[in-house]
Image (cartoon, rainbow, N blue to C red; front, side, top):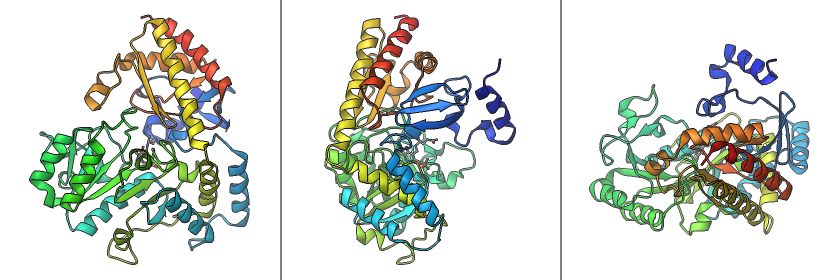
Length: 428
Ligand code: KE4
């Protein structure tokens, strides 16, 4: 008998491309039928067949306090009862701006938008407008949303101009984006030596979470900071994913590097559509209507979304809150590693803050090329085995995983038990 998930997937594909509103949800990397979820609470999701899953995606990062946290739901209900949208300033937006700037001091000023893509798209435009330069640097394997300038892959040589990584991105836009290898400080220094005067900005995931989890090796972020300072380019930390996950103050707090601009999303909306960009006030003075760099949004600072974000950040800002989730994430990773070792599986894993990476490879990858060498087929088999056991991992080998404050010992033990069974079916 067809499951409801299969019925809904068939119906969805009639009106929505691939039946989903964001590509990764279509399960094309892992195969099979996407789960259509009906409700969520704490660490759990329930799909259209009523099956319960322990959730290690958390909506790709936002649900750091757990699903449907009573304080967040109450704040959203109260805000919605007052108004759904004004298209005019509210006190709550000031409160959220003040909270963000307090938690991330490099953000002297901040503007709210409605997605991470809007945040990074604007940060790029702002860097170009502030410096009067055109070139942007990004890194292979880092994802910053789907703005044209950022859908670019490495050119023929790492130091040449980029090529579009999506149809519909004109070459004369892609050519202004240079794509280097993540963690390759020598390449960064060589590029700046040759073209430093043309570079408006460097955008980087300070901890990469879109090619699975890759940590910055010592010196990489420092090199970016030094080269940008030396050549008058802006360093943009894309903390849409790492913000309030790698540490309360983001990856910049953890690694002690101060960017010129930071982009945020996910957690600051608590599950509702909120993004943000901000940083040095002398740079932010260039944003309309103060300055010549235009940016706008009908629902920017939406009161219901801001209420969800504020309630979430109030919880996250509590002393010890992010550290406790980090400990849970460390326990998850060491437990999975122990089960894989027991089964003799070539498997490595790591975590930072409440993000984790699992790799079907003996060594932990340190860059894009090494990540591509991981055994994708094995990951896919593991993914489906765990899904059948009621554990929902990211449906792609090249995504990071996320733990929430709602995950506890019971969820960990259930996960280890599921992994023990699935690893045993994979064969060494
Ligand atoms: P959104 O436009 O999806 O809100 O944010 C784009 C973005 C920007 N920067 C970073 C570092 C990001 O991770 C993202 C979005 N992350 C993906 C997860 N791989 C969102 C999931 C999806 O695309 O459906």
